[in-house]
Length: 76
Image (tube, rainbow, N blue to C red; front, side):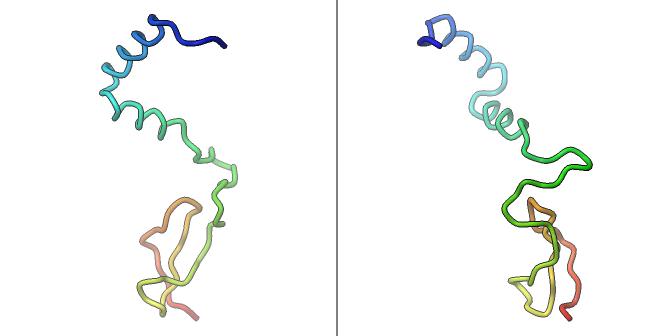
């Protein structure tokens, strides 16, 4: 691929303006998605499961493979 021409740059600027500037770029980057489709395994570095809760050592907190959830259970 060669260098971008002035027309390519103008088209990109128009698209960014339409999408809301930088917010549009962030939206597009997050929409490309790393979340798996139903039936696929998450690709995060930490496996989904119950882990000790940093805020309360007496609890376990569920990690869904992407984020910590509000679900807790007593640690046994």
